[in-house]
Image (cartoon, rainbow, N blue to C red; front, side, top):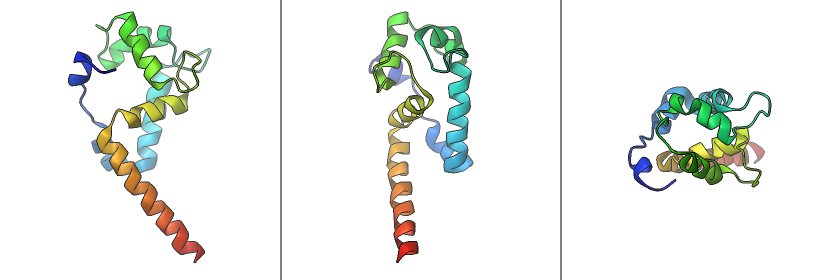
Length: 117
């Protein structure tokens, strides 16, 4: 997804995470996924992304650019994004959130280890 469109990307996930907390952010990402997914297949396909691209402000992207977005997050190579792949992609596109999530993980592990001690 590198290129001119990424320069316009504003990373709102860290502020959403701060406002909503971890669980709230995941809930909102899942809501976003459901908004973009093909209702019959329950995944985001090229067709469902094209159909709903205006919701993301991406209505001017060409098919090949949308396909590139799908491929960026398609971890299992099936040509579509599952809910988990979508959430992982959103985190990957947010460097600040990735750093923050590492801190959350470390904190959770510390708490778990302290509880077991």
